[in-house]
Image 1 (cartoon, rainbow, N blue to C red):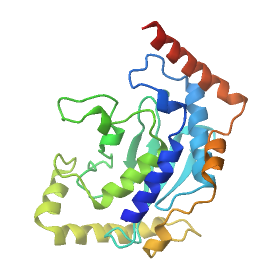
Image 2: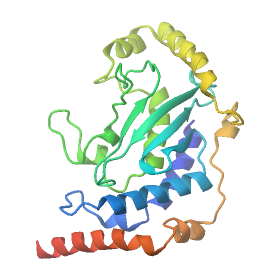
Image 3: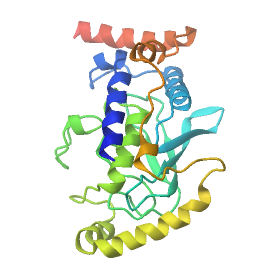
Length: 249
C-alpha cells in the first residue's frame, strides 16, 4: 500500500506541472462552465488512457462531464481486498476553483463516511483556512488538485481513517474500541460489493497488481497532458483575466 501511494504521488507531482500551479486560492475570476468542462474532459481522457490501479472512472452521461461514476477497488492486504465500491463524483461549474462532492452509492461503514454515503475528507473541503475545524488551507482543496489526487486520497483513507472528528461516530468508536467487530462488518460489505464488479475487470490480488505502470516518459506526459486544442482558449482567457486582476491589486 505504501509503495502504491508513493508511486501515485510521483505521478501526481508530474501532473501538477500545469498552469494551475501559478494560481492563488483567492481567485476572483473562476473559470467559466465551458472551461471547467474542458478541464474535466482532459482529466477524464488522461485517466482513461493511463489508468491508475485502485479505481475506475466513467461518465454517467456522455453529455454531462460534471458527473462521474467511480469504482473504488479494495487494496490487497487490507480488509477491503476484493471489494468494488461504487460511488458518484459531482463537480461544480467553477471547477477546479471549488471541489467536487463524493458519495458512495451503497452502504459504506467507515468513520469518515456519513450514513447517507457522503465522504468527509479534507481534500474535498472548500479552499482556505477553517478556524472551526482547525484545518489549514494546505489540508483543504486547492486548484492544483485533480480527480486523480482525490481518488488516491480516498483509497488511502479507507484503510487509514481519521477518527479525530468522525462523520460516522459509531464507526469511529467501533474502529478504536472493537477493531475485530469493525473488521467483520467491513468484510461483510466487501462481500456484498462483489456483485457490482464490472465484467472483465481484474481485481488485484497482490501488491504487484496495485503498482502504477509508467506508460509514457516524463516529457511525453508533460507535453500531452492538456491535449492542446482550440478548446483551450476559454481556459487561457480565464487565467489571463485572473492574472490581470492580480496585477491590478
